[in-house]
Image (tube, rainbow, N blue to C red; front, side, top):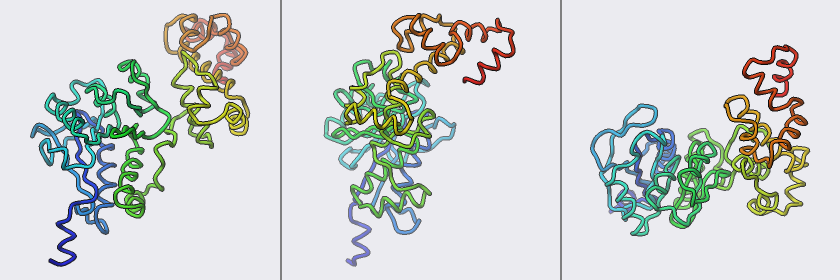
Length: 344
């Protein structure tokens, strides 16, 4: 047998089984697979040599993605021992049953057998619903952080990083972070050159670490990654604000270091940045809901309505009740309306 022949019959160094949910996110599946296929062969021939992958389903019917496109399985539910990782690809949260009972039981059996399970996009919700994330750290998208907290109050989600590996469970927030996770696994099994090839052919930069902050509209222009992650934590804990000590500890910083980073990056203290974030959140609630000022004060983490009103007026130059009145069309002073648009 020649060396080239042996190459084709040897077991791939990285074997992945995918289990897409109903209404799964197509980009999450395709990004993961593309990193594997580009790393798994020479050139752009896409042969499953160094990497192999299967798209599994308990049923032979097409699997519908959230965008409306459909795919066919390439394999039925397969012995978990055939894979290094089993990836649950989530998608739409509230659109019927995500996985059929056979697939859920398959995941439980795979976990019992010691398989490493990965949840990407809202795959973390599917693993948690199956009881497979108890006592584990779970990474979710900042977009679904509140949904996760509401559904799993006994778990502590994290939404300030791209992905988290906790033993034989890996959870990824989704989006472009799926490519970073796939590259991380390729590097682990095939080496850094294979991982870089996959990303570069996809026109992506070098892989980000799982601890890198998730992109977020509130932090896109913040240069320091630690400050971005701190802002994300603040954004996820508005009603019950975290202390600066807790935020610093989670970032493995001292409170003095946290203060210095915020002053260098944003020219303000972390406490002031937190208060401004909560005030902006309260302003959005005033403009978009019918909740009372007292209710909004509580939801924005202020101890009482009077304190909230003082802070709000000091920051925006207008009282909360006047913003509510303007939204109802009760204010007819053009200069007041113009000023409101200026401070948004």
